[in-house]
Image 1 (spheres, one colour):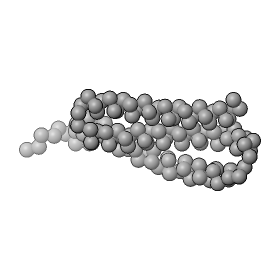
Image 2: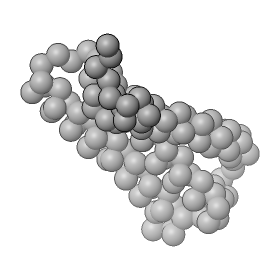
Image 3: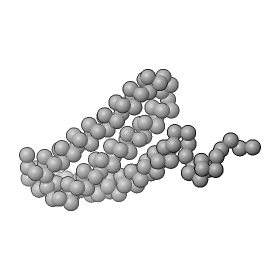
Image 4: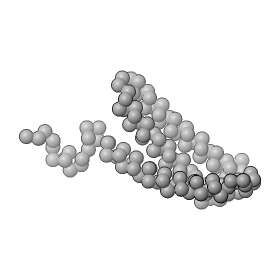
Length: 126
């Protein structure tokens, strides 16, 4: 006799009720990173040897700035989820795990914010 309820079988959720969400978000950000990295490599190659004014003008284009910010956000989310999995799997003390998970989130936010601020500063000429 199974101890699983029919609802659990339908939803396919684990005991934490968010494992599938993390799985799909990791895959979604991975796919978006793949597309955005191709753009980033193309942008970088096209700007090799360009002067500061050309680079600044290129990044100031709204579409380029938007794609760079999307890459920063997607990469930061992907990084946070990946590191969260490592922390949850390999840190055994509950107190240390909670502190590291909080620091992981703060770090990902700081990376995305610093990168976003840099792109915006270049875009708006600050």
